[in-house]
Image (tube, rainbow, N blue to C red; front, side):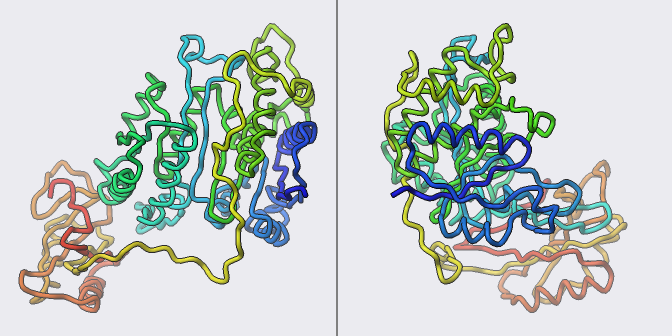
Amino acid sequence: MKTKIAVAKGDGIGPEIMAAVLRIFEAANVQLDYEYVEMGKSYFDAGHSTGMTAAAKETIERLGLLFKGPMETPKGKGVKSINVTARKVWNTYANQRDFRSLNGVDTVFSKAGISINLTIVRENIEDTYGGIEHLLTNDVAVGRRIITRPGSAQVIRYAFEMARRKGYTKLACGHKANIMKLTDGLFLETFQEIAKEYPDIESSDIIVDDLCMKLVSRPELFQAIVLTNLQGDIVSDLCAGLVGGLGFAPSANIGDNISIFEAVHGTAPDIAGKGIANPTALLLSGILMLRYLGFTTAAANIENALLYTLEQGIHTGDFGNRSTQAANTDGFADAVIANLGQLPEKGAVVAQPDMEVKANHDHPLKNKLTVTKAATTEEMVGVDVFVESNKQPNELAALAQRKQTDNFQLVMISNRGTQVWPTGSIFTELVNEYRIRFEKKDGTSITQKEILHIAADLSEDFKVCSVEFLMKFDGKIGYTLAQGQ
């Protein structure tokens, strides 16, 4: 019996490269059956705010796997990216992208004799991709960055398991915990805890800016790297540049119940319909999908044929030797099909499951709530109240001090994260949004109601933009100090 999967052809060049890849699958006798779903720009334009029809959503959730071409989200219409929405709605928490030097794809590294073979695992659900933003004043926009312990643990554990399957001996955690001490700090702390369960894999961490510098100077140092969502997005595209561009960068989005395999390059509307697009990235993503489904022999057969084809100098117009005639999309696919059964001289692959084998997904009756062990003690110690004001820090402090109570004292005022009261610099330039911090006095206890009452009192003099409680968990502060505090 054939395995049925959902297929979305995509926008722009999507239908052309999808047809080429599925034709290669058919020639390789891959036992797949396809149910085509309606997704993409035309469905946004038709009034589907999510970019897909209800029938498409039902099909994907029933089959548990989506193979998709590149898709465009209309600009300027206030709708969310269909690519990000699909990954988040179906909780495909791990984005795996494999980057390797390919014979026939010249780069500065291949010309220097440096071979690249590394994998980026990116957290796929959280971080700034929640898209939770607010204009607090006409001049001040704020985005909420969400990093959770359960979400971090999911993707980090996947990265370690992936490293084992691939035979890697090293896994690095890229982060910015030196600046984002609570969010990236939580991600790094989770990585360090889970690393203890994998003593066979050498774990390390590296600040993301240093990581980027090393990737473009000594990429051979790395085997696998796990990162938060935004940083992983940037670093994975950087790595695509190391191996020839997004046209050679496969992408797998792995979840416990639903997974998505896709080309992450653009829709290239300027060449759509001309039949000259490069199908390699989608084909490589499809090869990852075949391994995920357990079709490891077919995956190895197709990948070897692709590698042999590239090694022979066959290329589309976007890469390769410009002195030789470029193949069109169908011609490139024909060459791969003709080379099925051939082995490249360098880098031949064998049938092995370097992806997680697809589980039998179920249909839950309710949303899964994932939590870790709660802190032993939680203590409420104060509040940050964000207000709009054009006043100078001392004027603001004078008004705020009037709101102090027997339990609360004003301890700090900051502007854009920099302390401006009780100490500061006259050279610190201000915007019209401040953070006013009250902390409880020693020997007192406070309640949520008292905290909200402080904010209500401040609202008599200012527009209150937002309120954040200051907490301690097991005696450890759950908030950051201001710059200069």
